[in-house]
Every structure is written in C-alpha cells, then in structure tokens.
Length: 319
Image (cartoon, rainbow, N blue to C red; front, top):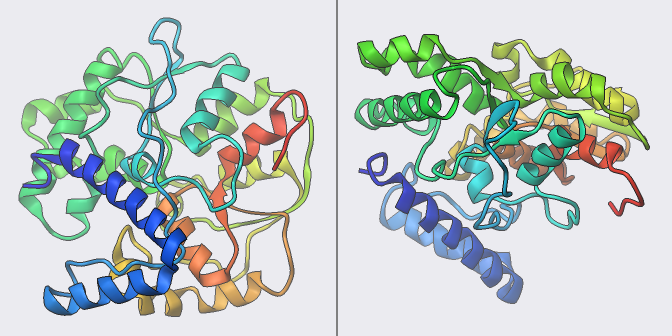
C-alpha cells in the first residue's frame, strides 16, 4: 500500500518531520521520545520508529530548478534526501543544491526530473522482506529512470550510496522481463564516483579545511567506491582519516530508530576512535548512516559533496 501511494507517503513523512522538529524546538526532545515510546508499546516496536534527538529537520518542499537541455546527467535525489534536511546548524546549501551547483561549476550540469516524487530505490521494502511492495517500486523506478535518461543515453547520478546499490543491483531480481531489459541499458552512477571522476578534474579548489574524518558505509564497500569518498575528501581537507574500526553503523534506514541499541553496539569502537580528537568535518554520503553516526559520536556528519561545494565555491564562504 505504501509503495503504490508513495508520493503521498513521502509528502506526509516530510510534513511529519517538519512538525516534529517544530515541536522539539518548543518543548524539547524528551516529550517526543516519550510519545513515540508509548506508540511503540501500543502498536509494535518493529513498526513504529522512536523519535531521536539527532533526527534532522525536513528537507525543502521543492528541489532546485534545473534544465534538461544541455544536461550531462540525470540527478536522482534519494527519497531520504527529499524528506530529511541537512545537519543541525548547517547554513550552506542543501545536498541537492550542492550537487546541482558543483556539477554546473564543473561544466557538467545535471537535470532533476519533475516527477521524482513518489519514486524510490525500493530498498525500504527489499530490506524488510516486503516482496510485493519491493516489486512495485523496483519496476516503477526502472521504468522512470529509463524515460528520464532517454533510454540510458544519460547516466543516472544517485546521491545516497545505499540507493545507488539498490537501483544498480538489488532491484534486478524483482523486475519484469521487459524492465530487466530496460535496466541493462541504464548507467547508474553513485554521487561519489560522479564527483571524483567527472567533477574534480574540472574544478578549482579554493579553500581547504585542516582535517576530516570519513564514515565509509556498507553500500560504499559493496559498490567499491570507498576510494572515491577518500579522493573527494582529500580535495577538501589537508588531512583525511578513515578510522581503523570503521564499520557498519547498523542504522540501516530506519532500523536505528526501531532498535537504537543496534547502532550503539555497532558503532562503539568506531565512535570511540573518532572521539579521541576533534576534526573540522565529519563526512560520509548516506543520510541515514550520517544520522546514525551523529548519534554515536555527538558530531554532525554530512555528505562529502556538500563539503566539495563549499571548497570550490567562489567568494566568501560561511560554514
């Protein structure tokens, strides 16, 4: 049901996040945790997420305006980045704004289709074993992507590593025979690869921070683009560190809001290592994993592409 009506579900989720954020500002986060805690007991802990103080505010209702004419790629903002905004206190562009800006700056403008709302990489359903919903969304995103990219003539750039993995690989077993043929014609590119391979060679870095620590996600490991994460970060920071104990954050989309003890356990070693010192930036490229690391370390993680936009932006920059 949620897959078939995901456009309405997405809008409702964004409104709920915005409302919760405003309530939290007025009465503090404790009451919200109490309210969701009671709801979890009344319904079921596996179905009702718990409100966490680290949950960011809502994303902007409208995505940046772009043009299909002259676009070098189709940019697909993942649904998590259409629902959740950036880290608290971040005054720069949002992730979609940053991707659009830095791509244009490199002479590789991207186009965001007008009808991305209501589509998803299908990982929400796939990860929970909801095969019927997964089948609906897997076929919907492949059909939409094939149309957006003019039958695969343009690459599809995805701004969350788990969603890149979902569209590129995990949807395939759930596609119809016809859509499996369409999928073979698509080129799915993670935003890290897009930034490292296509944008960086054409960008001028104007300012660097002293240090950054990275959180490579499980999906980055599967996709094999951890080195691209490092490459982009090294363009933005003099010192780049990947913790020796970096591993799965176990936030897993909404799992960290359903069973927060999983994230606490999974991140214990990595967060302890991260917190042995201070860094100028805490970077990754997957919004929900960033929230998990926010909770684990007490620091605000955000996409490395947002830092790349800041590092290459002409004029004065306010962090």
